[in-house]
Length: 295
Image (tube, rainbow, N blue to C red):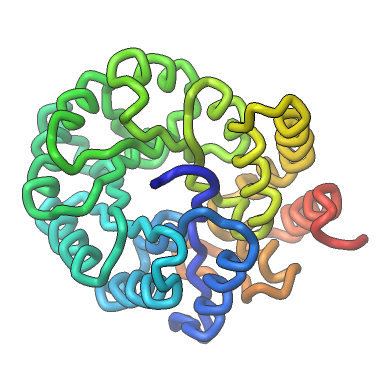
């Protein structure tokens, strides 16, 4: 169910408030352009600076607008287990198809602490749970052994792997098998990740190149040599864009790209700021390179 190109949705703001009208347009843009799943209220959705009411609202709006056409994987993680449980319960009540739960950041739990955190969430929901392992932001790295323990629980379904380490994918498949869903969080590695047994991505780039990202995912898993070559071509086409979108802190660059494509404004909330002029030029050039914007 959870495979292919799942977009880590940006959250548009207007006068520092949630721009609901534009947000709904963005969701429909993905429904019309082949995106396989929607992921609201994650890192790219600026969840750290959303109020609880806003966090719940963006999930509700996404579910209501998707109308069951494609899965909604709601971001419900927190470094407070109690808060993560509450957010996950809300997402379940709102009708989400799964929860994306980031490893607790800042307080640096042990592997046993990680296990107990996810077990507690698991015990308080019936939603499938996707572990979000991103050591670069959270400082901690969930081990394959801990994932294997968690996979024994009824709701732990898979992982969004943002380690950037392809050998981790190999290790996880070897220990947990192919039933454990593996999605990459690294756009630049998406093609290779799928070649090695992954089933998809939770993508930043899909915000502005949904059709290309969706086609790359679909063709990369095809039995047709021609379609696999097309996936490789699309992957190469998008590589400069993937890199440009992470020159500065996500999601400021992708929001600027979205502005250039008339999708939404580039406003971000403090402590994030809009990207520098030098970065703007690189983002623009990468859009031109990907044939998403005319020179």
